Length: 234
Image (cartoon, rainbow, N blue to C red; front, side):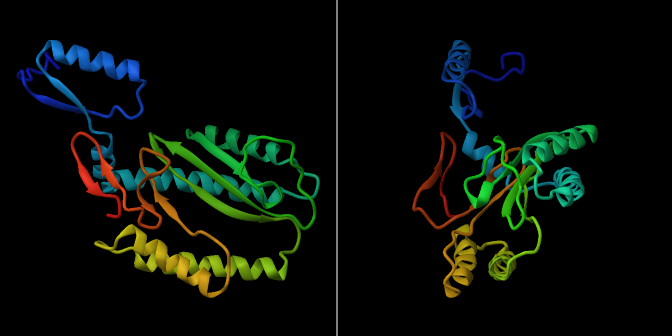
């Protein structure tokens, strides 16, 4: 900071959110010796990063394409007796070969909680969820797909179509100036009218896996650090 010629009594924002407290303390002390005050700008930077440049969008698109193409090649080979961790390993090797870092490849054994480990073996009739993401030149992708071994049951097909309707309704509401909670409410209204017990929600992507905006109901909380103080429901 001294080498940059920043004057004393200046105030510098640093993303301290991901740093150990010891490092944040060291940085603040070093700045103080030069008469500079350090503040946390983690949330301010997250707000700024909501808006992506065309170049950033292309990096995210590339990460998503690689992940989805790889999954599209690996998942159709899942049959009764396939170990899902083996599919995960193949996915990891394939994306690495394309110069992309694996972020996650999780699955939900028998529809339960997502995990990346275990000896879950697919069986005929299983319908589960697979969630995967990659990092391409620092930018994240995050995709999900429903995996069925054998024919999809009629009840599952109805649920699948209903969730598709919910997502389409949310997508149609994604317009400048629309609060994030309103988008979530529109999605939830579709499933609620059908008597479907679910919590549709979503999140942004970028230099983090879960970047702003976050599509959830309005909590009444605020986005706050040493430089910003804004309503969370932007």
